[in-house]
Length: 119
Image (cartoon, rainbow, N blue to C red):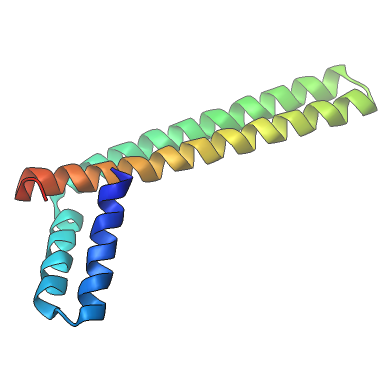
């Protein structure tokens, strides 16, 4: 999927550089169709809501783990534990954001396939 999105981006850039206004406008038109598609927007909103729930769960979990660590540990162990919590939270957020952008790319490619066939 990423390769296909990169292909659309590269095609758009190439059309612009080559001065092929018709091709450039066609690609822009396809991308506008994707953006303006109601199903795409609904799917995207639903996915964003799920993403937001997951982020809240991640922060809630990290907060709980930090609270327990503060209540039960002394200084050296506490700082190590809090560092581990921060690292795991950062890793989880990065993974979630990566999945988010991959999903958006997939939605775009699938929409184009449905509407225009294989490209």
